[in-house]
Length: 221
Ligand SMILES: O=C(CO)[C@@H](O)[C@H](O)COP(=O)(O)O
Image (cartoon, rainbow, N blue to C red; front, side):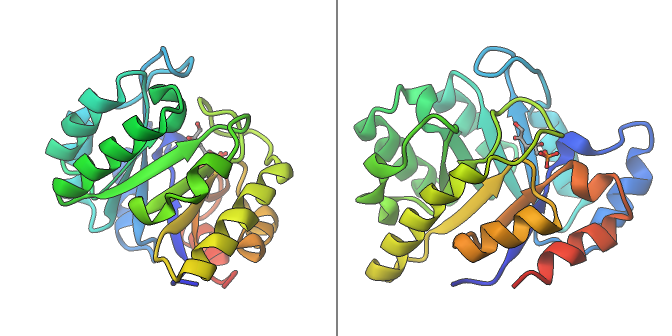
């Protein structure tokens, strides 16, 4: 498996003291920053636009791991690539789980020089994607219903991770398996054991010393 990456979710950042928290992130061992984009339609919450991503990109050395939870994935993939995404992950469900459309958007994102990710909600099976993992750089398994931080980890999602990991190893692929939702030191350990190499964590990291939270996840490998 690849090096373990921790991607703190800025959904949980304390926006009453952003400077202090961004400084802590900038000097942390986190390699990616998870930037949650929500449109109030695909999920019942509204978050950050492209100008905020531009600002984060200037302020932080981490790779911008942009997760678009929006209905119009094609339009906003380009909007957030233009704003500086290094990884652009969209939802399978936003394209009605249409495999041709999913793979075509992955190819487009890669042509733009950005890593392409496909995310699946808890009720979406992983099987249709298993023959196509080579065509994406990241498979993002949601371990909560997307929309809000601070929810409980759905352990049943680890079956999807195990299936994808088996296929990635069998085919010698470099596709990452990222997991998002309810990750802490305990659930993160379960996720890594199941085959995840990329952990998103929001409330766990931002509700304690940021460096300690990140390091406690990084040492799970
Ligand atoms: O995308 C989402 C929620 O939709 C996540 O990135 C959450 O922000 C993770 O938060 P925690 O579950 O770690 O608090």
